[in-house]
Length: 133
Image (cartoon, rainbow, N blue to C red; front, side, top):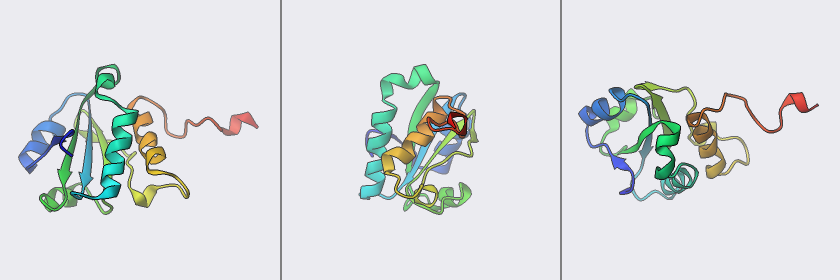
């Protein structure tokens, strides 16, 4: 996870996420976990660092659930990896983890739902809407 900004303490979480103005993304992960690595790969593909400014993203952070279990408890992390995002320090309701994955959805498709929301899409805004009927 070296290419994401690592949070190593609850104090860093408070300063980097809770006190941030703008959008921040946070990933709770297990080290050396293939699913966690898949989330990071999808996130980097869908939201490259070069697009942060365009979408108002301050940074993407991660924390190791083994090292900071109390932070995971505070954030109600029950599935790992868990991708969440914050606007001005407040967590958005749209998150991704295996427990909210749609049947048959790839990791990249799930991460895309969160990234689309970060980029400004409304909840439920999809290409195949009921209006098409």
